[in-house]
Length: 351
Ligand code: NAD
Ligand code: IPM
Ligand code: MN
Image 1 (spheres, rainbow, N blue to C red):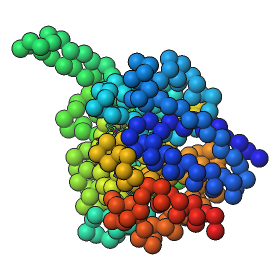
Image 2 (spheres, rainbow, N blue to C red; image 1 turned 135 degrees about the horizontal axis):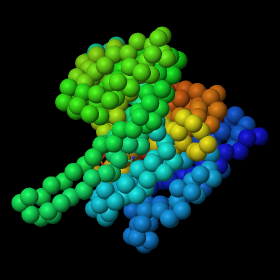
Image 3 (tube, rainbow, N blue to C red; image 1 turned 180 degrees about the horizontal axis):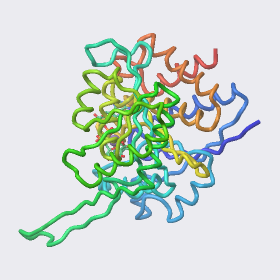
Image 4 (tube, helix red, strand yellow; image 1 turned 30 degrees about the horizontal axis):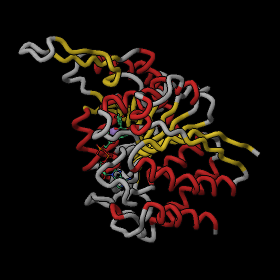
């Protein structure tokens, strides 16, 4: 029997609530598919920062390498620790430290979920965001602090290797799906990085003659995701553009409570990290209001990545067997708590 060791990083706010609700559901599906999930809870969070002066131990990324996957809730409590410290020292440190260069985020409507769009045409988008460099490189600085001449510089770094690997992964996905790839830039305004991205797209496209590439400027595709999402399939974008587009993707699929995310290193050898797209939602934390579906869906992405495709499919089916009934948390127009919704899904699996 396969046993997978999973690092459980609940983090902060509703991150803890959704992970604690989702984990038993994953245990149930594992049992039914004759494998086991051994979870190790790691308390790295803003709370941890207050007692240790850092978000995770100095060898945190090394510790994570010993696991088969990482399952994360959400990080950040800006009232306690500034976001640029908590996120850069934990979430972004893991993405960059494990070189999780691909962040894949599926956007579609689950059965029975109406979504906010007027059109009822189904859509199925896979957004792939570059996940380790670009606008999130962290390079830059401040000079003349506090003075009239103060300057803040945030340098976006796009390397050939970094752009090529995320493009290649996206072309592969497009090949396995509809054969269509949308490449997102802002090359009408950003004349270095984004023109480079376009050139790299041309180069990689030469190896995928069966994939049809359409280029979009990020502003135009942002609108298209709302007005005609059914015209899109695989969408590849830089780190920041992908971040923004995937909150739009979340919105059109019913809200942030639905959108799931797989951070992976396509070369393998390190664990992937699976998490909801949303954050720690301090505005609703501690009330049982958080929607656990994004985290459960991320759990399905994790099982799929571990090679347990049948279990992943069963989990998605169980999620949709419940959403189709109209049951849900308040953000879905329902009355269930985080735990109640997760337990309904677990009960479907147990039937
Ligand atoms: P957020 O995603 O936490 O919340 C945005 C809005 O969506 C809030 O109104 C919230 O109540 C709602 N929401 C989010 N998830 C929900 C869910 N599962 N169910 C129901 N409603 C949900 O974004 P924010 O408010 O900008 O950020 C809050 C904190 O989280 C900040 O510290 C931010 O940096 C951090 N953050 C972390 C991650 C992460 O860990 N991956 C992602 C985004 C934001
Ligand atoms: C996400 C989040 C993070 C990001 C933040 C919290 C740093 O918004 O995972 O989408 O921008 O990547
Ligand atoms: Mn985001």
